[in-house]
Length: 397
Ligand code: AMP
View 1 (cartoon, helix red, strand yellow):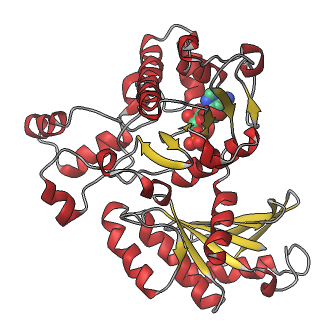
View 2 (tube, protein in one colour):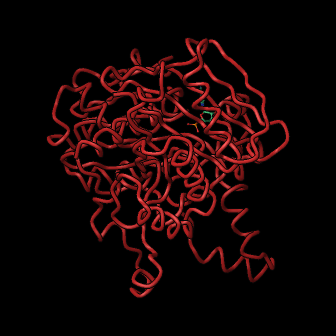
C-alpha cells in the first residue's frame, strides 16, 4: 500500500509518499509560505529537487499542487492519484485515551475541542485534512495522534495531584507528546532484537530540541516525561522541564510578568539556552564546554542529570528493562550524551561499549557490551514511516 503522510503547519506542509509494504520512501516535499507572498513547493524525487513557485493563498491550493507534483509526468511519484491508497495526517493532540483513527466529522470536532491544549498545532493539522477532503474527495484520511501512544498510561501516572475537578471539568492531566517517535523507536527496537514487542520492557529516550523519555511494559506505554503540554520532564533546548510550580507565581508576583511572558520564558528562554546563555544547540554547547565555558558545562550536566533521574525512575517502575534506545538529533548523534546518561550503571546491568558507541551517528546500532543485561540501541526515529504504518493498521482494523 502507498500512503501519503502529511504534516501540516499553519503556513507550511511537509509530505512523504511511502510504500508501507517495503517501508521505502518514494518521494517527499515541502510547501512553504502558504497564505504569504512567495509560496513555493519543493518536491524531491531520487534526491532531485523540483521547485514550483505559485501563489498558494490557502492549504487548499497547497494540497492541489502537492497532488499535481505527485502525478507529474516528469517528476511525479505515481501515474495516477488512484495509486495513493490513503492519507495519514500528523495531528498533535487527540485528547483523552484517543487512538489514531479514520477522520470523520465527529473526529474533526474532537480535534477542534483539543485545540485548547495544542493551540498552534491542531488547527494547522485540520487545515491539511480539510484541503485533502476537498482536493481528493473519497480518499481515506487517518489522524495519527502524537498523544495516542500514551493512551495506555495508568491513571496513577497521568493524574496530577491537584483538586480532582480540574481533571473532570478541564481535562487537566498528563497526555504525553512525541508519541509517534516513541512508538516507532519501541517497535523498531523489538524488531532489531527479534523479539515480540509484547514480551519486552523498553525505555525510549528521545533527545532533540524537545526531549522526552517513555517506558513501555510488555509492549504498552506506561509512563512518559511530557505532561499536559510539552514543557514537563527533561531539561530541553529552550524549555525548562520540571520546576517547582511556585516559581511561576513568584515570578509573576515579583516581576509583574503576564501569563504570555511567563509562557515565553518557560518555553523559549529556559532549558540549556537559559542556563548557558549561549545556545540551545548541543553541538555549540559541547564545543563551548570543551573550551572551558562553565555555564555550558552546567547546562549539559543538568541535562544529563535530569535524564538519568527519569531513566532511574522508569527502571524501578519496570523492574526489568530489556532495552534502552536513543533517538532524536542528540540521541542519534551525540555519543558523549549517550555515554554520560548511562554512565556507571554496570551494577544495574547496563553497560555501553565505547568501541561501538564512539563516533556512531544516525544509524540503527546496538551499542551495549555483550555482557550488558539491558541492550542499549541507537534507533534513528522515523515518524513519517510510523504514521504510514499506523494509517494502514487503522484502515485494516
Ligand atoms: P532534533 O530536534 O531531533 O532535530 O534535534 C536537534 C538537536 O540535535 C540540536 O540540539 C542539535 O544540536 C543536536 N545534534 C544534532 N547533531 C548533533 C551532533 N553531532 N552532536 C550533538 N548534538 C547534535
